[in-house]
Image (cartoon, rainbow, N blue to C red; front, side, top):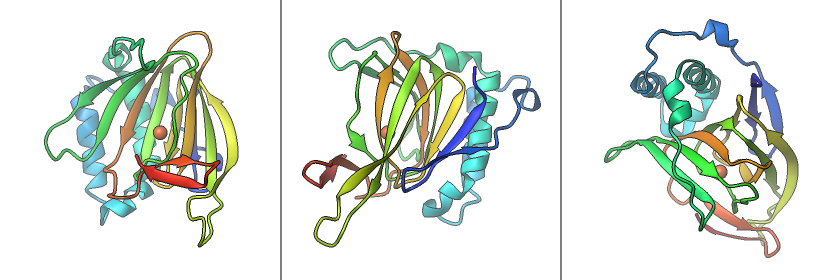
Length: 206
Ligand SMILES: [Fe+2]
């Protein structure tokens, strides 16, 4: 398992960030509800939702702490979906809950649309491998949604990838076995999440 943390900037640059060592993160009885409480306590310190991404280093650390201590997380696997190739298991939700917390299983070869999330995000590969293609805006007044490819990288088990709200990516499950990822996202800001069509320089709400 690789111990690498990444930050992908709004312009699609994938930068390695300092990762906490697992032996510094060992906790007794680190249940999933404790993790969720740690995250919401952290986010309470942000003056508003738009500045929550400022806490990405601390959020990445909490996600690594969860990965280090939670056997349960690694066993939460949705049944494979043979139609779409992607299945999602929501790990926690209630009315008005601001976070998206889920494990996602993708069959080999499944390719996502090109999209951003309109909020910060932290994902970690539990098993398998996925390739991310990052894009950056090349927009002008006449073509505000024009984008161009920026970088490409394959992530494997133990690698934590964090995103800015504006980060644009496309994810492909690579390798011969299904890919299981844990995904944590903030509250999507209205009218800020898009699916892009680079050939037409257009985007639609996603
Ligand atoms: Fe995504």
